[in-house]
Amino acid sequence: MNNAKHFLALDLGAESGRAILGTLDNGRMTLSEQHRFLTGANSFPTDYQKDDHSGTSLVWDVVRIWSEIKKGIKLAAGQAPLTSVGVDTWGVDFGLLDKNGALLGMPFHYRDSRTDGMLEEAFARMPKEDIYRITGIQFMQISTLYQLLSMVVGQSPQLQIADKFLMMADLIHYWLSGTAAVEFTNATTTQCLDSRKRDWSAEILDAMQLPRVIFPRIVMPGTRLGGLRPALAAELGCNPSVVVPATHDTGAAVSAVPAKRDDYVWISSGTWSIVGMNVPEPVISPLSLRYNFTNEGGLDGSYRFSKNVMGLWIVQQCRSQWQQEGREFSYAEMAGMATQAPHLKAFIDPDYREFLGMGSMADKVVDYCRLTGQPLPANEGEVLRAVLQGLALRYRYVIEKLEEVSGRKTAVVHIIGGGTQNRLLNQFTADALGKPVLTGPVEATAVGNLITQARAAGIIEDGEQGTAIIRNSFPIETYQPGKPDEWNVAYEAFKINLEKTKLAF
Image (tube, rainbow, N blue to C red):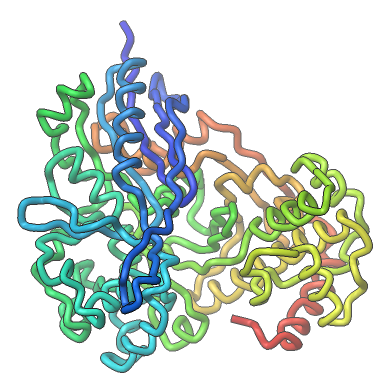
């Protein structure tokens, strides 16, 4: 008798989305990608805040995304009977619905320029310190709060007639099930949530003149919303349950950390690196505000006390520059070149402001080394090694600040996500921190999504059993630290360079 159970993770990133079938059988999970599609934003003509009809806005083509989602469900259902389906996405973006459940325009992309100046507008309505005291969320103009405030300032008709506010994953769950709710981990990214009450902040909503009535109930990861809408079930030929995972993709990824002990810190490694620790309650203090740390929701009502670090974006942009210059390198070739380069000759601060933008990234690395008085990288391998060593040193800096503010010491580092495939960076991280580094799973976001669905189905009893299944199902590699004296000297130089560039946090 086959006792295998099948779950579908719809994992949507800012560039692409995937439908990943997870099969749980005899204490092991296997993954199978059923469908992959583009999600990226479109520039769309609007007159938003413009009178000369020259304006454009950056929006999500949710109609096309919805079509791809249905295709992914249908393909997966053709392979196996689905117990449930759940969606995870990026944070902060949302859709507004009218009283009949119709979408009021295409959702805006977080990089749209309508939030320019909205941080200052918000602070004029409520002091920055009070917003942080309530929410514990770092300040970024892309956050939902400032997107909504731009609609208030612009007297948006959409906001005036809206009946429901839903984050992107919640919007898709609503279309699937007909049930409107906002999941906790993504709700925290809005900077509209009272982090201690775990509910919408009336104080913030009122200060920003946002209508409280449009904000639905908040639900925790693992909540079952129901089956598919009858017409949709007939169209797709299946009727799985709709279960909300940790719908913020980082929250889903962190729920897949295969930790055996509590004294660890995690790094979600990819284009961005997010460095953090799990805490039972938000860590909110003048010091956490000074360092601009954030408290985003996690599994089982916990919080992810963390900070963003510029990640492998810099490596990706270096490769792009070299391609444009006629030098084509695979990532495997780049890793080999970095391995052969001199050790700790130079290193960057990946969070230096010039690395945020696109274009000529390898030149920017050389310029940083010149600015900080270091030996200049002489070739591609030395540029790459300077980037990877700088990432490892920045990780150490952030983790020391996490430990300082939280009052917790950590002994182990877990790295999850696609960046785990960069073995040289993994070893540098272990060496720079002087702590063992455990890497995997690579597909952490999908795995966290699927494990939460299995918990909701009662097949997995708790988080401890879930992490045991992850350890049993996916390769976990350990990197031991070495060369402590060399890395300690480099770290002191790294901190001096921070002073030279006036960018510590």
